[in-house]
Image 1 (cartoon, rainbow, N blue to C red):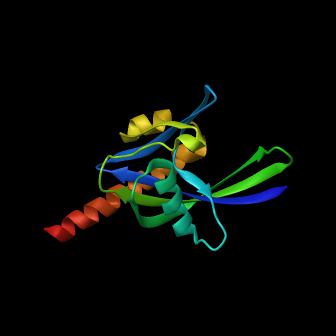
Image 2 (image 1 turned 60 degrees about the horizontal axis):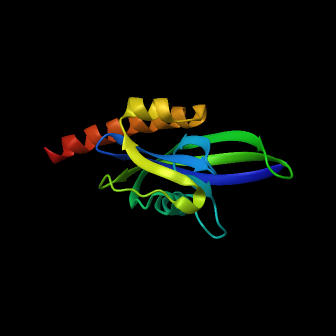
Length: 147
């Protein structure tokens, strides 16, 4: 069994969540949140920010760590046990551009209920819900401080 670690971001701008649509060789792969493999010498935060930038061209800012998900799948030669560390992030615009080299055909910001419906994987749906609750708490706290 191979152990793999990735990091990603639940990116929110003005209450909407950033999603990517993957379509590989005309085959539906589903809507996901940006994430990717930790490279040598990188911290988890650096990986999450880099992957968001590479996959969506979004300059995001980390608000906080929100947890991890774990799943197992069959790779080309072995079973892979993957852990993904997730960060709540914000962006300062709705601009995004899907990374074609990774077979992302579309990217966009969606309302929470739309994002929940679109996301392919249950664990990402749960992480998005957790991040959204943290985002609302963060937004309300910062709003009070500006008064």
